[in-house]
Length: 439
Image 1: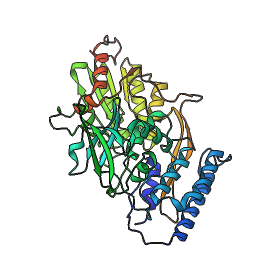
Image 2: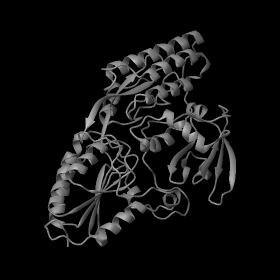
Image 3: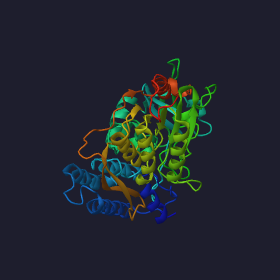
Image 4: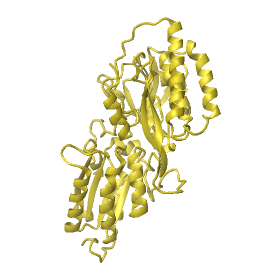
């Protein structure tokens, strides 16, 4: 199945990392001479496209370490599997130094990509399984201690060189998504059998168990998935922040804190309502109800069309000027257009930030353009634009003044320690005397 150009254009406009359509893996056999020549031509194409499109390197020479790595890859192609070639191309993209340039370890038409039937998340206390394909659910809630013969701490250290990033939080977010792919596992862990991948787990009672998994084909379309509620049996009811992660924007009153909770999950208009209309309705609600605080949650917002958030910034600026208090909850997956949005809030509204730092810098190179490599059918994203929302700002992220890192215990129990801390702060506010200050 060919990459649909319309889909590629749409995803590029949304800044969706790995937001690609999965392609079929059936490949006609080619002799090794054709294969090596094909991959080398794709490598040449990739370097040419970087020179032509990347915001930084269309006007300056490519980094020497990238050129050296490309030559080494060219020589190693005969000894590498197709999955490993994709991984080594991704390693080259990391050297461009931004979070929007990448070659994903899946989706190439000529590559039979495989992955573990598990989904990982990195909490403050380690890497855990948070979801699994049918038949593997018993591993949900287990901490990963070893992959192949390599301890997980070393696996994660090796993984860093394969993750495109704006800052260290991007690695926390994207690394666990990339890790299950076989080509990645063969690169970062020793003793990997391509057909039976061994792993060691530790349960809540510190009991360790080793298991093997047959890699499976990736299924369906994929963008980097949003966090899901705990799938452990007996978990508490789903917390507010995980109830509607697929809804682009919505709100809910929290009367006991005299607060309005607003969750903003994607910079995309919906068929039912545009962001501008939502912002207008929000402004009317704030003027009428005058809550003491607005709690804006952008933990799941991975980007989209950056300008669409401007009306929401305007509304919150007016609310703040009228005496209201704004809290903004961020996380590692607050990225791309969402970073532009919170940077504007930082300048104009001066909110109290809570949670984890975001996955982008206040100023970053982004706006990925997608290029299809002609032989393999792999798709590369190349960052083509610089977003300078706060001129001269060199911070790696906006550091939350209420810093809360999510633990596995809180996540699997369906607790939200970030919102709990923010609500404590909201309840402690002395009612303002201005019109927006609440009651």
